[in-house]
Length: 363
Ligand SMILES: Cc1cc2nc3c(=O)[nH]c(=O)nc-3n(C[C@H](O)[C@H](O)[C@H](O)COP(=O)(O)O)c2cc1C
Image 1 (cartoon, helix red, strand yellow):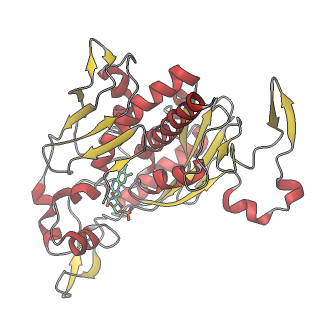
Image 2 (cartoon, helix red, strand yellow):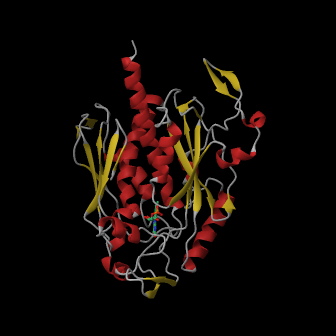
Image 3 (cartoon, protein in one colour):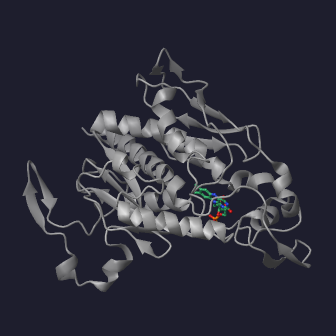
């Protein structure tokens, strides 16, 4: 059972899609950090529904309130509670889903596990839950940026069968990513991706995609072998995002098709430290950051709720046809970009605090 994530920077999210609100409680945020709502809102705005014609039309302003843990614009070191109220629920859209579990959604498994479920809007399995992660992640990002100069940038690198060329990993910025509604910095690929999403939506269907993320200026030494290796925690963090189906770091699955002589990241002197000429490792070796950029990819499936009729059975096993009503994302990746960045920030902050504690213990 877990709605909590992290060891020292521990985040608990709460709220159902059609309940009164969603949010997070962060326990372990360092004290005396300047913080107000304006630090959090920009990432929530990037996650928000109805931000473009490529996303669900549910209208939520997603304004965040900090309820505790901050005084006169500074963190107190005490739990920070963050709340976003839900305003645009339409439970009637989910009437048929009381009795018919959506194929490839979480209705059946939640019902089997708990014997009860918030059928309206998908409850906790809805992507509305990720509001809390993004709000908490924005705080983690601020800490990482101010304390270490760490920068995190994710973008859409593929939609359905359309792959975008890689941007310059050393320089890609969020402004470039946000130039297109689909959040792909390559504008030619972005145009094709957008057309594919609109086409799927008009057909009452959905499509998947891939998000790539780079994190720069990570100090060497973050990661807690053996079970809390950096890539292991990242994989857990990313695969906890709804609709994810795959995680790759560095060369990923493609690395299995290479020879060691080509795959090895040869060391070179970079300033005071050693660096590597290539980065097939993706910035992590032995579960510990090596000072090179962290680079990973997350695959998202086509979302389950589609308006096209689907032959299926109800909870009793009777044949039926499901034509989902409601407002749904035809492709989740444009909105999932800030969610991936936020989960990366939560992992890195937790590991940075653990390393800081270890260094303080050193005699
Ligand atoms: C940003 C975002 C938006 C999503 N929007 C929808 C949606 O509109 N309709 C839908 O069926 N699933 C949507 N999902 C995915 C479901 O929440 C998810 O597929 C469902 O909970 C089942 O979990 P699983 O796919 O991880 O197994 C979205 C996911 C994300 C990250």
